[in-house]
Length: 164
Image 1 (cartoon, rainbow, N blue to C red):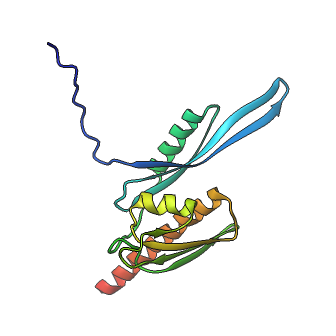
Image 2 (spheres, rainbow, N blue to C red):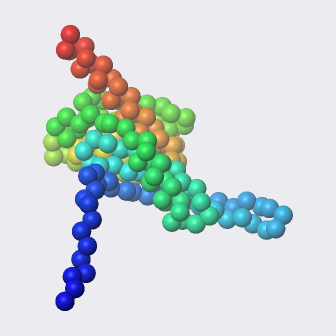
């Protein structure tokens, strides 16, 4: 009997994909309405890498593929020490204000939906956060990513200063 199982090369990095927001957008044209979708996707490997992508297409599945591809291409490295971030960080990006604080082991992810999706995809196990300003999920996700990127830069600078 023939064996129908195939062996594929293992993907070295397995990414977790989360869809944060799906928007239906329509545009008035001469021939009628043109409907499309925009999808905000968060991709992370749970080992300190995370990215965000916005995909736009006439159908949802294509928009998801585009968003995930962009997120994989534009990932950032996040410093994780004992399951949490090294220090507190506050950021204001547009209307979104995000506060990220390190938390002791066992406290888990104390965060709202937009921030939770980013930090869990990054692999941060213990963090406390607060979103102020806007309820717009896309703005909050982008603010969280920017906060993690700036936190990473500051951590690298401090590590370089300690080595001297």
